[in-house]
Image (cartoon, rainbow, N blue to C red; front, side):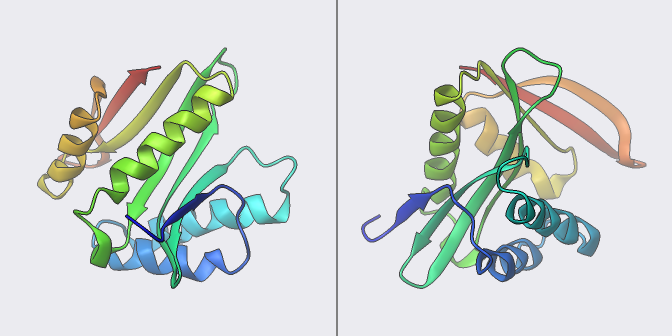
Length: 160
């Protein structure tokens, strides 16, 4: 994993790369890709007040993956992990684990005690669920037919 760096400060040049990573993943609809990019745009538009935070993993050619997370208002010390995505060409190299670990470190440094992640119950997301479970996240809840009929929302959590 030489020549890769982690950074937290977003730049305008990250917008197109995030769109490309999300769009080419095969996991997200066009609307979901737009939503993911809009969170980064919101952060860029108001760096001081945006509740969205990021971790980017990049090499000399640009971003290969990223996470988006944020404090859950109304809680004492809980955070949501909204997005974690790695470019298709870089999957299965430990980059997702590296991004998740750095995100957890960032959350701990901010006083976070619990992280929540939501995902789909469909077969497409089975590797995602296994990744979370391998990373010591536990399934806390399942909401039937949340995304669409037959596609349940699964909520995972990890206590720091």
